[in-house]
Image (tube, rainbow, N blue to C red):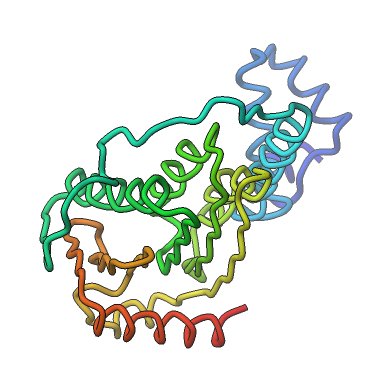
Length: 243
């Protein structure tokens, strides 16, 4: 039995594992590391990481639903974006500048519109965008209608990226002042390589279109009714093609 365990032909039972750990005088850290490796071997690395993420999500859901989030204090836009005069086109470069442009546009919608409405067609790793929306809706007395399409990579070496993004999305869905309608689709590596569009992702406010590059390094904001109508139709088409 020991020879088979040593050569990897079989895994030790819980009792044999405990006896081996005791006989070899392993530390608690070494025991935990070996237990993790055993579980990965039994269920597969990806399933192991997915299980860990799911356990974290259950804990987050429990925490969010155990406390009543107060909405007694209205907050304001950090940037004063709701009063900014919009130029027809605004181009920014660099991840920090892209995120700032998106946040300013979202703030303009949340605080400058009586009935704010956001439409997002972005991938799961743009989580910072959702985190900003969540933070701005905490304490906000307005009601936001949020629609999105999340795109996830079909294959992953560890946990599915979507499980990590769900932390923020679940938080949004639990807010009483947010009506959240979400769609999703999976994108294979081949699909990603074949799509050579410079700005494949976009966000729609009530009046603006923000197009975003694949690597989140460039963005363009358009204040153009014709272009807005085109992207609005495109968003409806995407909704019809996703789950």
